[in-house]
Figure (cartoon, helix red, strand yellow):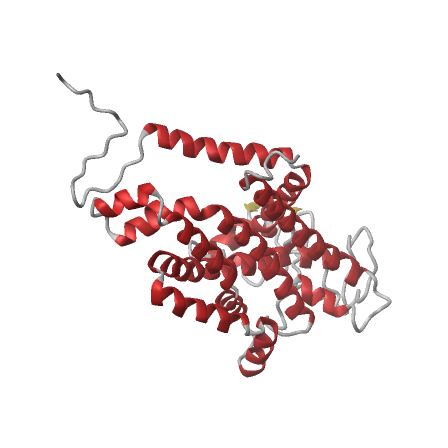
Length: 360
């Protein structure tokens, strides 16, 4: 009698990797579809997600929202696009036209100019308008050097988000690697890595950053690296716990029996199924990194003095208590951003946890 082969049958040939069947792919897609539906039912989480996407849009388009170069200019009968040309020059894809070199685009007598909504950079100094309150010219006021707060917040969003994501990216790589090793191999490997977890938890990240700032010149990249290299423990512990739970499941045992390499079992078969709590930890980690960077900038350390960030604008309010706009607007930006990430993180946690999925 001929036996019809099922699509779920896997040949027991050593060295052959496991292949997901159509049913398993459908179940995986169905799981993430259910997570998305659960997230959409959570209004606070969706509100936070929309705010995060808006912040991404502002950070990505910061040069087009606040810049001292016009989009379009007609000068001596010729058309120019200085803002777009500056982008080409920055990335080494073009050069300035000789007639535009060292030109002050605000004062040049051009036939026509079209500036961005905020026609200045956050670092542009104008000593004629120090501590100007919010007005039609400066929507959110200026600081003691006449720098526009609106432009500073727009360009500061790029720095805050960059530090948050790069720092968490470093923490994600280190945490997943160490957590996977500890959870999969167990035994003395788990014991050694767990002791490393405990050592790292004793290190006060904030005071470590202060100490490093005292020894080295201020650097955004150094700040990113320190935050990332000291903030991976939470991700590693979640990864370890998931690997300990998953490594004894049937499909992992089958992969070992088929001779699949350890690396493929860990990162191709186990890790995709262990992502749920890791994703939540990553989202909350971004919020923590942004808050930590803002705290350091508020104290005047961590980033170069000429770099405008949300925390550095807030720092200006310490010596000028009458300039309420220097405290309210950057403080609100930090609060709303951190709150948005926490709402998304909590929404993901509820959507990924079957026990909480139907609670809303």
